[in-house]
Image (cartoon, rainbow, N blue to C red; front, top):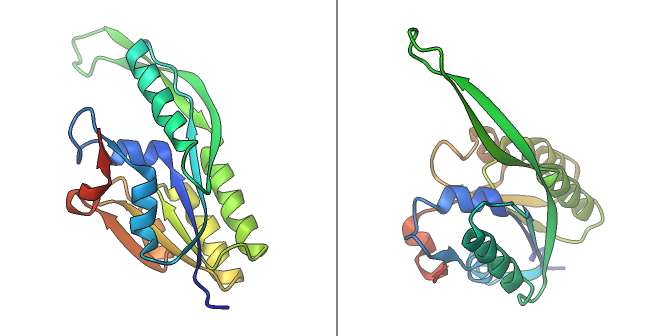
Length: 192
């Protein structure tokens, strides 16, 4: 065995939010190209892409998300793992002490994505489905899964994310290898 089997675990929302400032408006990251670049010639077992269907008041934004998700269905060895988005309201009081106004913001938060990623990464490691996991996320919630994999299996975990405050220091430190996603790194992974 050459210890070269790789599974790629992508937190789609995290990737989208973190790369938004690096790519031009109207362009997207090509998930297949990104996964192949991260692989670096090693053997791909499977790509798991985690996200939610996010409701939007803008019909074009909803269509764009659906087109993107539909394209993922054409990528060999990729499996989408979709979770749910829960409506959430935030009420904020005006910071000016003389102001009594409150503002209510409506949004959606994803539920279950981090848990699903953690369970999949650990389960596949324990069942010897891969030798190396490439985790594309900066989310600190995944540290325990990475620690477990490194401490209880002979698997390696590489972590890739955009440099900055969205990349948890604890997650970087828990990983065997860190792959910063910079604008230069992503240049050949961007499509219209």
